Image (cartoon, rainbow, N blue to C red):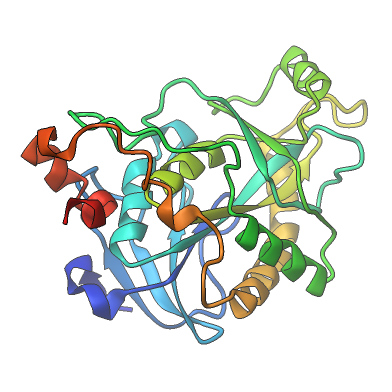
Length: 297
């Protein structure tokens, strides 16, 4: 693969972005690949983005924690990651993430396609806006229903046990939950727990990108009597088992992705920009050109 700059634009364009989490640092089956180092107004993404063709469609893959897993959840430059995808022409983002289960019937090795998030993070930049421009996007339904259905159907086609909905509670990390926290999350009837997805989902919505997640269940957190303490070694072992299934599901999902978006994700900012655009500082307009460009003309 050769390195290239994102400014080559159309040549590097991709319609589907895949963000791989713990255990998924590359995309099998990606053809005609090239690495693209994208510069964004928000800094550098987690790693070079690998663009190529998968099942006949242009795809851009990014390792969320960097190849070699070098970046803590709190250290991820989420704004740069999502902005880079937008700059490359991505319209849809599939997230693949490792999660812990908070319910007995959600077993390690199974997948869950989350349709709700609860945000318990503390130290993250989770909006593109500010600096003289106020926007409030709707986030009652934080994932794309069209894409979520495709991911769930793809899991079924690949004979992977999948749960089609559930709430993902996102904590700051990097520590796992205390026992008291795990019991609280269970009492609130959350399904799975992780450390990354809600921030991506918020930014994807602001960027008018479809976003859906495959949550790969690796463990029972610490609440289960047979799994009293979670260790990274145990999680990695299950991650390795999940990785092959994730690759299969991703290929099937990309193959089955409809050409047209039937959701509302692509118009999320239509009624969200509160500030009179004539009053927005030029520097802010420039920084957000890839996000709000169509509303500036």
